[in-house]
Length: 273
Image 1 (cartoon, rainbow, N blue to C red):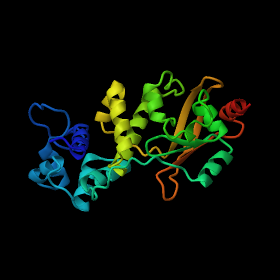
Image 2: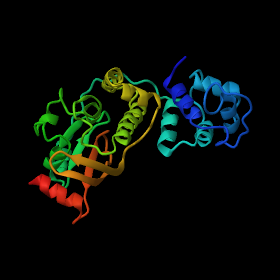
Image 3: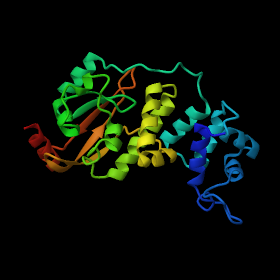
Image 4: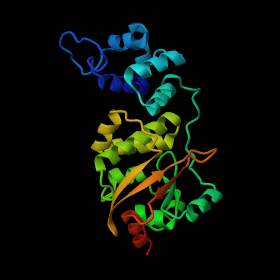
């Protein structure tokens, strides 16, 4: 029986060798990484219990079991939270078909930001942007494109499926990984979102690269970092970004920043002109 929880546990179990876990390896191994019984021993649970958990035949694992598995699997904080959501699912909510609509006050805040700014939802749909954000991410699109709820720009679809969609990014492999990790993170937060499931299905069918990365189960909140751009209008530069979640929504403000006097600031000034 294949489940999201089971796939995630198997992917992380396969990524840790017995030597990395401080175990002695005996005999040939048919698959990489830890065996089920080895991980169960490291986590302090019985092999039978762990097998049932991996096969999703045992729900509502205790906090102590989840924490022990996270330590044994050396999960990041984001992966730990993702494991908790998968292992202790809430009562299933009705499937969501709702189109996300930004608050007007948030759109005004985005438009007033001094640097490039976007408002995105948990599917990576662009709900709004300011002029610099538009010129940075998709200058070939109409500025009002995010207002067309049926044809909003989607950053992940753009990267994997649209011609030239990845040309903006210098570190394309890392960018691809972060896109997939963000959708995995979102799928744990919004398991009943039909539109998110449709997006993942489309990307899996049309992009072998996305399908391969999706099978690896990366999990990434993408809340901050540095993006390296190769912009078609102003060339090569780096920008720091922060992406806080807006209260009472799953919307994120992506705010890009350049140090005054830096080459990136010069590039943004040129872009604005």
